[in-house]
Amino acid sequence: MSRYAPLFTAPVARLSALNLGTCEEEGIDASLLDQADHEIRAKFPKMHSFLLLRHGKLIWERYYNGHEASALNDLRSATKSFTSTLVGMAMARGDMPGPDTAVHKLLPEYLPRRKETLLERITIRHLLTMTSGLYWQTGKKLGEAFIHRFHRSKSWPSFALRLPVQEDQIGVFQYRSVDSHLLSVLLTRCCGMDAYTYALQHLFEPLGFGRSGWAQDPEGYTMGHIGLYLTSRDMAKFGDCCLHQGIWNGRELIPADWLHQATQRQIEGYPEFGDYGFQWWTGRLHGIDYACAHGHGGQQIYLIPEANAVVVFTADSKVSRWKNPRTLLERFVLPAVSSLNLERS
Image 1 (cartoon, rainbow, N blue to C red):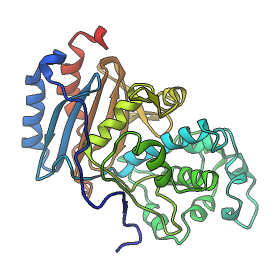
Image 2: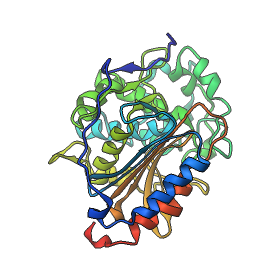
Image 3: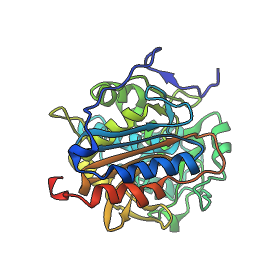
């Protein structure tokens, strides 16, 4: 078994329950979704699933290439949005200090031996917005030149905190997975349990998730940047909970004020992907606001508040080149959900 193999919560897969609805009930033109389905079958050979929730009801669910509702998806970097959510929950519960807390005070054993005064300026907020200033290289498609070196290191927190700090880049966005992993390490150190265990107790089990998995780093910290495995339905459940101010079955699981900050623009991002909140991409398409958890290969959870809709796409993650399903959202899904009676939302 790989040292990064995910830990699973149940040996047997079970179908996650959701309220079901129909396009007709929601007044949605199903022909547009049929066109999206046709486009996927013709031009997206690596696609695994396409789901649409509206008003909390699952009204569209399609699987491709042998995938099925009980199968797990490798979320890749869409994991980051879950990590951010757990941090917000932990802060609200008093398990973690606030976002303006200096990181070096919480992880002294991982600091470089030679004192780095610039490191003392990095806060949890910097990690949440990927503005830490830690030296990193990121390509146009979010490829990270140092990620394999990071993964091969024996101590991921030490590797991250020994990176040089670029003073002029503190507060400037750069896509940087080490920031996300440090959030998971901080949560573990503050809460006394790994992020996956924390998620199971306070988020996944209350949401009624089925089988799930989340990989660890060499020291046992839950990966903060990748490594989460969920079914498409459970991805949709999470999205719907976030869309409705963190409320699930009448109970607040995620603080509404945190979600508002996390899914709104906090810093200018990249034109090709959008601006950045707290480990969520944000932006506007056709004049409609959205927030997106995004992962390599096409793992995406879109929150569309104006239409009271959640869209989930998943695909094969083990690819070097892939087509972004965002085009399906723009061409078919948004017209389907936005041309209707949005006042019902």
